[in-house]
Structure formats: C-alpha cells, structure tokens
Image 1: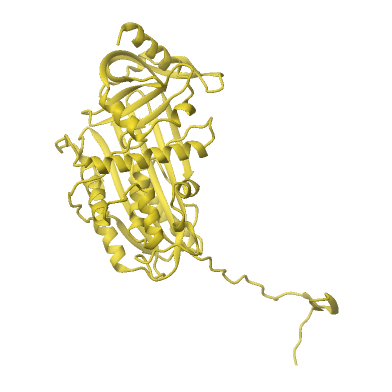
Image 2: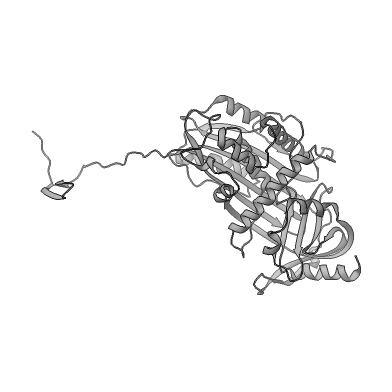
Length: 433
C-alpha cells in the first residue's frame, strides 16, 4: 500500500463520515466458544482479570464454535441495525446476550429449546458441550491479558414463593459460576439486582430494573465489564477540534485524537479497517470505515462473519496517521424481543406455548430480553460495560383491586340485556336489621 493510499485512509478517518466499531469482546466480533476448562463455582466473585496472570496466547476455541457464535453476532448486528433508528448510535454486546440466553437455554425443552439452539448458532452441539464452552469463556477471557481489566459474571434472581427445580438452579450455579438468590420479589427488591449490576460494571450501569411486577418470577442477568488502555496511547496535547460529517451531510465539531504509528490495516472495496490493540495486544478494537461514496448503513447490510474472518487474516502492518474522535455512549438500552423473534426464537416468548420444563413444573415464558450498555473512548483507552437481563414471567395474575364501600355510595339495579334500570339510590348512612 503506497503513501497515497495511506493518506486517503487518514483523510477519510479524519473526516469520519461514517464510523463503525468492532471489539472482540464488546462489539460484534465476539470470540467464539469452545474448550473444556472447568469453572469453579464460587457464585460471588465471578471472573476478573488481575495483574500477575500470564497472558493466554490462545483461548481453546474450535473453528466450528467460533463460526457459529460469530454468525450469531453478525446476524444480531443486521437485525439490530434494521430495528434501530438509522441516524442513532447503538452499542451492544453479543457475548453478554449469548451467555445470558445460554442460561435460559438450559431450562428449555421441545420447540422452545430447538428454536433457541438455532438462534444461538448452537445446532449440532450438545447442551453439555455448549456449557463447557461457556465455562471456557468465564475462565480464560478475564485472564487473557493482565494489562486489561475484564469481568464476566452471571446471576439468577428468583421469586422464593415460586417453585423452581433445584437441579436447574444448581446446574446454572456450577456451569455458569452464577450467583443464585431467592427474593420475595417485592417492588423494592429490584434494588438488589441493580446493586449487583452496578458493582459488576464498576458503577457504569447502575439500573437495569425499574420495578418488579406481580407476574415476574425470575431474572437471569449477565454482566460484562472491560477496561483497557491503548497499547499505543494518544497524546492529549495533539487532540483538537475537527469537523465530523454526519450521514446526512451536516457537520459537527468533535475532539479528534491523533497519532502516527504502525497499525494493522485492511483495505477492501467497500471499507477499510484499522486495528487498535489494548495492553499486551490480546484484545483489540477494530475501526471500520466505509469507502468514499458508501454509507455506513450500506456496509452494515453486507458485512458477515466470513468477511470478519477474512479481514482478520488479511490485515497488514502499515505506518498510519490516525485521527479518531473522542466519544462516549453513557447509557444505551435495547430490547431484543422482536429481534430474537425475527431470528427464530418465537416459542420462548409465547405465553401459551413456551416450554421451560427443566426450570419449573409451572408455566412460564420469556417476558423480555434487554441490554444496557456503556462506552467511553478517549486518549487513554476504552471502558465499556454491558448488562443483559432476561425476565421470566408467569401468566399474569390479576390481583384483587380494593373496592371498599367505607363512605357514602350510590346503587343502580338494572336488567342487562335491555339495560332497564329498576332501582336507583344513594346510601348515605347504611343500617342493617
């Protein structure tokens, strides 16, 4: 690649008409799942990377698992992109969503199970294999780079007056290293779940539930936290105001970070990509920029899991003048119900046909699947978090409404078919024989 091509890429990034961010953990190129490392069932601390661990050069992931889960990630991307407003930012974690639904999958049977298996890209794998894969992620990802802080956590919160199968709770506690806790499920109990989410995300996601409703019987929650410093930091003194061209052609001022360094790059017909490493290089952010004349929405519709793999294989080191805006998404929330249904997971949401017989002998269904995320990118690095919450509910129980006639009241006696009123009156001072 000649100097002219490098200059063109720099100018495109500097003008930033379109920007898409991929991260191996928190964005779209989610690391596939495979391996056989056994998770320890602590149920309280989860997994978090700490200095002192030797970097894991390779995480035991089969190509088949990598492909299936990355297929899920890009299918999810396309569905979310179609559902979200075209001019708005969005930021999701396929890994957090996949693992959260993995806990739900373990309680499913029949058509509900088959559809979830298909949606998650796990067809052809046994549940035991899938759970072992999740254990590998829980065990190895937080230790992959001691220079990067990563936490991956699971929990189940259930209504303690509702009967759940102990075998299911024990399995999730062991295979997903999950905190398992029963609560009365009073409205104020939402604070326990919110406090857990806030703690696991270093205070970046403080509230995932507004309240607990009468029909709610279980919440399955996954939290993912990531904080990594750039391997090659940006000099703050070089950050300056610059124009950012929006999709509709309007411009706005952003704080543009700059550095000249050697980066891994990919140049395709529809887009170019630059890979920015964190810490020791085990985790990276890939910035993908559509080619001149292409919109981000056009590129979104075409990038596939295969394209992602091809991009990784064909990146070459190049000296690059890089300009990247400083940006953040302090609070983003997305409800996945419709997206998951469009991906084939329908029965789980059906109040009449959902089958979660491995969880409980009672009839329950998936009421909602949503995700809250946080993102900050600056000269030092990236901090990101995601909390996925799946709410399980029973068919709505209509609680009796209070109607106590403890003050003067009126009465009307009528015939319903003709609506003929027979008597009318008011009772100001009731007396009885």
